[in-house]
Length: 194
Image (cartoon, rainbow, N blue to C red; front, side, top):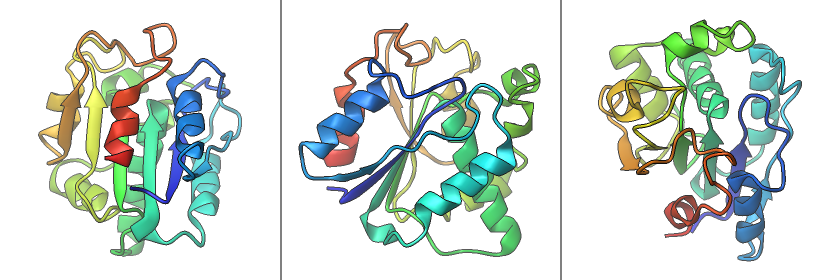
């Protein structure tokens, strides 16, 4: 089981009590897992560089073999941008044991939203696969629904298959938000603690 978990929220998310990430933080803390659940800067008008700096400050000093990262929505694209930045710098050492990416938005959708267009992945194909794989000791996992309006082609087709990631489907889950009924989300908890 993870000894430390870093939770990365998405766009316009101020970590409300009803969101599954908030629920997850509480669930993990009852199991004596150290949880980092930072409020990323300006969630309504995020700046990629500021979010990357905030992420890197959260990662400082953590033993990668004890860390699990759980990201939702734009937080997933933040993690992918972090992987690209590390690849550009030549870094090859893992920064986490496990990475769980829930409901990542598709590049075409991001490009159509000016506030988050800068989060569109810059790496594709083999370069993206290598960069993302290098961030974790275990193969990263995508958790997503085929009915996600922010990823109309489906996260399995857009991310899991081309990037060689494990895929866990959520039937009828939408974008895995409060409005979609997530709230408690035992599936993600079990992926972390199992």
